[in-house]
Length: 288
Image (cartoon, rainbow, N blue to C red; front, side, top):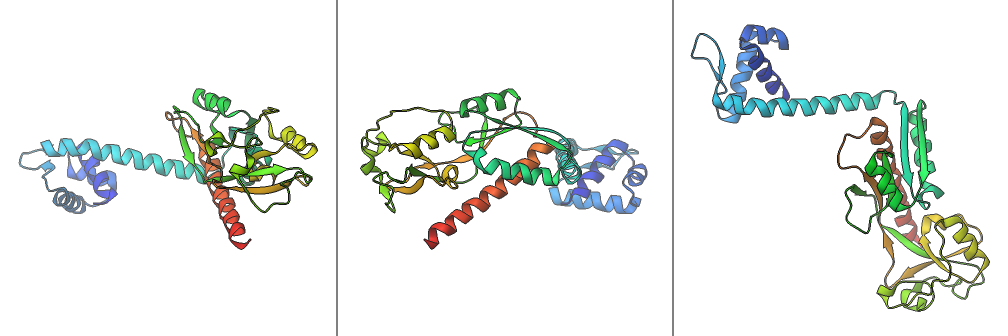
């Protein structure tokens, strides 16, 4: 079964005349008749009643016609989206991202997007994960880039890859020279209760940059995403094991409503750059 079979059936159902339907779909009457026969053979039912002086849909034809129309409508929407995506994209794209992603990942994605769509405007808001979920859900943002929500969400979360967390330390910290550190060694220092370590929280900050500056100036360690400290010259990065803390970054969408061409284009860039980054990090770990 091919799309043309469905288009021929819909045209015939609307015209109820082989000659007029054939003219509409730009084929000969005999070709149209033959194609309808092929479709009937494919579905295993007679769809057009030809016994009377005029054509009529059979009961099976009426049933199948509704699905054929819906299928063609979806295909046409998809083709329209592709044509629109292939052309110039303008208008405004609103993105929400947590602080970690704004250190390098989001700027690279935005740069690639603007290189492809110079007429578009991009607005990036650096927000907490809670505010991103709230604004995506309300429609104030087209999409969000954040970590997997810890609680059930009314939004769709599209995971990108698994991201290992690392221990960030000042150069004079007693663990700074280690190649790796086990979670249990962080007991009463920096890590997780789930791993049997009791954390002492001495400072709380809601953004990464000042937290890293504090780490660089003190003997306080911080567990952060590797990308957040990759280019920080004043810090030492120590991998964590047994277990290695993992977070899952991804894209947040609204469940309802159609994604804009800007959002679809940007999300495709996010997926590709995220795959490239994950692949590069995997290669780096294997060659160490």
